[in-house]
Amino acid sequence: MRPYETDPAAIYAASFATVRREASLTRFPADVAEVAVRIIHACGMVEVADRLDYSDDVAASGIAALRSGAPIYADCEMVASGITRRLLPDGIDVRCTLNDPRTPDMARDLGTTRSAAAVDLWQTEGAVIAIGNAPTALFRLLERLEGGAPCPAAILAFPVGFVGAAESKAELAIRPRGAPFITLRGRRGGSAMASAAVNALAILAAGGEQ
Figure 1: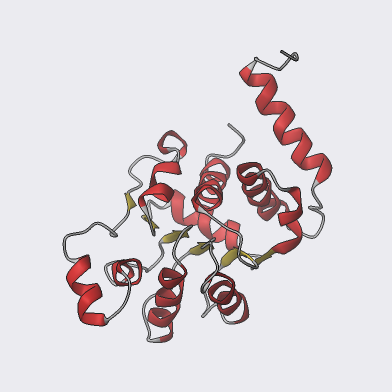
Figure 2: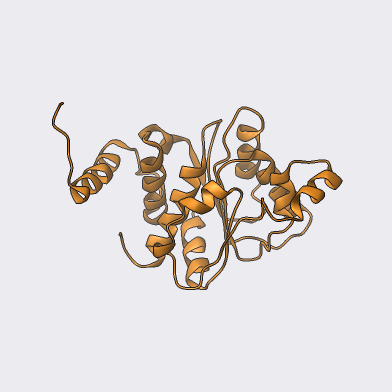
């Protein structure tokens, strides 16, 4: 067996040092760069830094929302589970409505996916939105904003896949409907990235790195 690092603190420090050394982060504002670092760390690919689209105010807006006690909405249980609760300010509610008993009937009535129907149960005003699975959830969120739904504080959009993922994220980047956002162009994404972005905002909201 080849030697390998076993000290948790050393692994943690070396991981983030590698990301900061190898990723191209100079184009990001300092707070957005911290979010980018966590996203990269979650997927192990420094090249995704070059494919992140964002608004300059996404980190500041998300931090302010968390500090004010705004809820976090996740499009799936994997995103919700990946959010580290101990990092969040006291009283923050992480909500996932995918398995709400109302969702299946809503999806059938609307002729859409459960992921999209679940978005209709979100109270978007001032919330932090984390999407790491379903492109239809992001499309539906944008439709709701188009129709006058209140604006979230931050949209962290990382739906993944071969049907609609690239397109939904491109739509967000081109016309964010007034919402601060960060997203990853193309097919790549996933729950780990979305929850990592939330965790990054939580760490920044707490005033440091944990």
